[in-house]
Image (cartoon, rainbow, N blue to C red; front, side):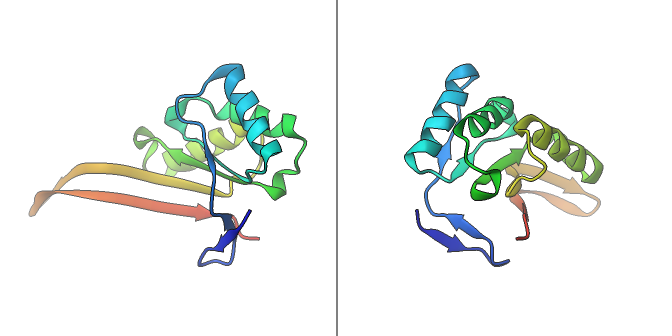
Length: 132
């Protein structure tokens, strides 16, 4: 599997396996089989409600966690500095690991208003990437 170098030097596999709308034992099995097939990037999100199953599939695969690139996404209701930190810790607990290679905070077309500011749509994305 080819990697691309991120700006911090971390290598990210070019192709990953996403688990949107896969739940329960099926999710754990699919993740395990994806890893056995050669995938090294697994993508999930808090809003998929399957982080625990992703972690189980990773454990079942027998592959060392340091050899995987795992991404998850913070749900919009968990935004804000303290909420985000708590939700990342919760995701790591569910994934059964102390590191997530990257965690993305994203929202689509959210309206922002403030004093003297017109409403506008924006996309916000923040990445927390593991340092090797």
